[in-house]
Length: 219
Ligand code: G6P
Ligand code: MG
Image 1 (spheres, rainbow, N blue to C red):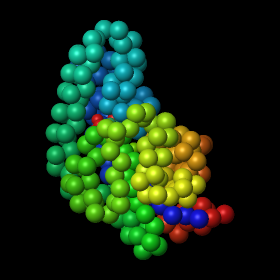
Image 2 (image 1 turned 90 degrees about the vertical axis):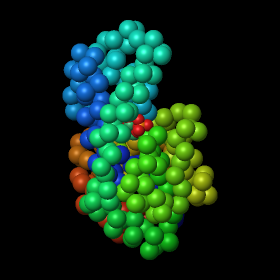
Image 3 (image 1 turned 45 degrees about the vertical axis):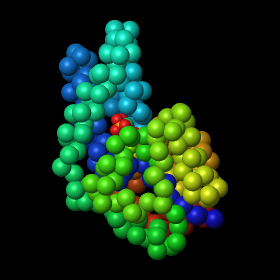
Image 4 (image 1 turned 135 degrees about the horizontal axis):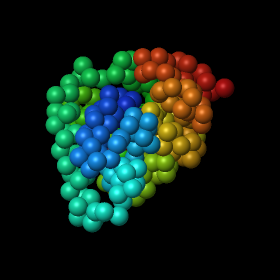
């Protein structure tokens, strides 16, 4: 039986995935590494330091920086990112999300956030959505990032529901993989071709339908 929804944040609730991309792209260009939207798909859902490692690998520069320098690079990216998102307001909530959250609550189901971002609390506050979530997983306490299922399993544990009663909503390939490894039902947002592993795919957040997800989950 369906009991809870667990949401990713960036690219699902709001379009901060675009700002992560722009900030990483600027950093990559500073390092003379060419960085495309296609490569960016591999970064979605991945933690800050793991993302930096991937970018350095794309450029063949993973050996060139000390741990201290890597921390500085990641901090630089984050400062740029924070600057880019400092103007976000509730008008930046993606279409269809507020209705979906309302429909979930109306059906008396639980809602949690499973975001890999250390900025998640700040973003949810700026969107004025914090009250809609029963739990927000503290990513600083998670040992393994997506595609490991840990963050989704932690959310289910906090909600006190079995993973098999949960729907996870993601825009990242690593995220969908994490949801499936957690034994949950995976709803992906994005192009159908990218999400063979998802149980249900919506091209846009606007198309998300609580009724349809519930029916398909129960099939
Ligand atoms: C999410 C995003 C990633 C981002 C990561 C870490 O998973 O999808 O693009 O790099 O969070 O975010 P942070 O705000 O902690 O740097
Ligand atoms: Mg995402």
